[in-house]
Amino acid sequence: MNNQVYTSILLKRNLCFLLSLLAFCPPALAQKSPKFAACNFDATALTDEGLPAREGIVTAYSFSQNGMTNPSLWWTREQFGEGKLLVNWIAKTAEKQIDLVVNWQLWSVMGYVERYSFINHFGTVAREYGYQLRVFNQRQECLAIYNCDPNAATLQCAIDFDPARRSRFRL
Image (cartoon, rainbow, N blue to C red; front, side, top):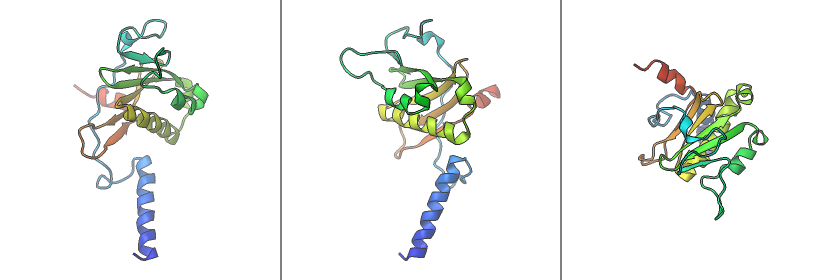
């Protein structure tokens, strides 16, 4: 393959990747998105003190005496906003679901690319543990969903930045 053809392919691939970050990639070049789950915050998962209300729930404040708590998001948390952006996480082991609770003031000043980076980074970590990811603010409003199709032959993940929009118009 000559250099011009290789450069052209490389440029198209990089351009598609960059445009996919902004959701402008044509459907033929984008992966088919997995179906998104409902995005309702489970207020019964935590006590008033923010601790797990029942078995099978792990939060940012859960500690294991035997080893690392799974899923563990400590290092990932520290990489974003020095741990100030992420207020808490609630991992439901039976449902394989992680709900992040973010600081609304810090979230609201983030741009699209910053939000994408945050969700993609946490979503990748959640996926490595076999979990799906949802992001909420402190008022329990769903801000985003990172969802992967576990039944797909190839890895298919997608981000929905406005899940509330979908549920507002559902009958």
